[in-house]
Length: 369
Image 1 (cartoon, rainbow, N blue to C red):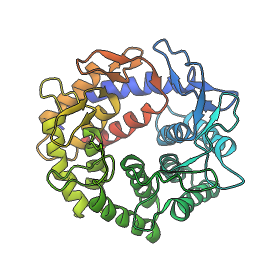
Image 2 (image 1 turned 120 degrees about the vertical axis):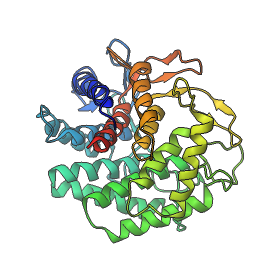
Image 3 (image 1 turned 90 degrees about the vertical axis):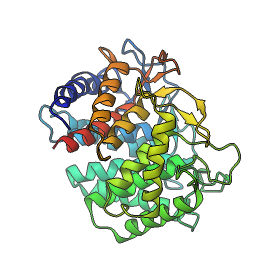
Image 4 (image 1 turned 90 degrees about the horizontal axis):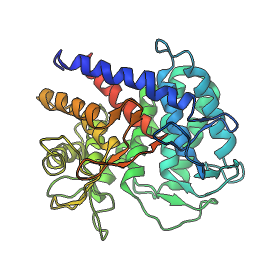
C-alpha cells in the first residue's frame, strides 16, 4: 500500500479503537445479562431489546478476543471472558446439545432452533479466543461446536443443513451459502491455531461441494442458494468475502473453488461496484442487473479487505478506504446501510458489525506490513 494510504488507515483505526469499541464497553453492554445489546441508535442509546442472539455474542467475543494483548486494550481479556461465559450460560442447550439461536429480553430461551450460522460463529470466535488465552475450557467448547456441526448438521456430501429443530429434527432447510461460508471461516480459524486433520478434510470437502452445488459455471459466481434453486441471486459482498478466505489460505488456494471466485471477483466488481463512488450493491441477478441496490457497510468492508490480496489494486484500494471512511464512518459511529442513491437508510448500529470492521482492518494492517 502506498505511503499515502497510511494516514487514512490510521484515521479509521483511531475511529475504531477510540469510538466504536468503547460503544460496546459502555452503552452497548447489558451488564445484567453480560451481553451486548443487539443495536444502538444514532445517539448511542440501546434499541429496546426484543432478543439477544448467540451469533451476536460470538461476534463480540471475537471482537474483544482480537484485542487481547493490544496496546491500550487491558479491558479486552476481561470482556472476552465475560462473553465466553455468557455464550455458555445463556445459549447452550444442556438437554440436546448445541446452542439456541436466541433468548428473550429477560434471558429466557426464545428461538430454540439450531442454525449453522450461529454454530459457525461459535467455532470462529472460540478458535480466536483460544489462540489468545489457551484455556482448556475454551478448546473444549471449540471441540464441542466442531463435533455438533459434524454429527448433526452434516448432509454427508460435504455440505450442511442451514437450520434444524431444537432436538435436531430436520426442517428441510437444505444448505445455504452464507452459513457455509462462515463455517469455512470457522474451519480456517481452527486450522490457524492448531493442526487438525479432520477439520482440514471437512474444509476441503466443503470447498469441493460448494464448487459443485453453488457456483455458476459462466461467471464463477457463488450463488446464495444451490444453483438449481428457483429465485436465486448473488451478492457482490459475498464474492469478495469468499475470495479473501480462499486467497489467504494455503489449504484452499489452487482449488477449483478458488479459481471460480477469482473470476467471480472480477464479475462482481464490474457489475456490482460503482466506479465513481465505490459503492457495493446488495443483490444482483446472474446477468448483473441490480435486484437490491442497498449499500451495506459489511460489503464495503469485505471489498476493501479482498483488495489487499488482489495484484495491482493499490489505487482502487486507496479509493475504497476513502469511500468507507467518508461514506460510512462518522463522528458518532457508522451508517449501517445507504440506499441505492447513497442516502442513509438505516441509522441503528448493530453489535454484529464491528466484527466486519475488525477483520477488514486486520487485513489492511497485514497488507501494509
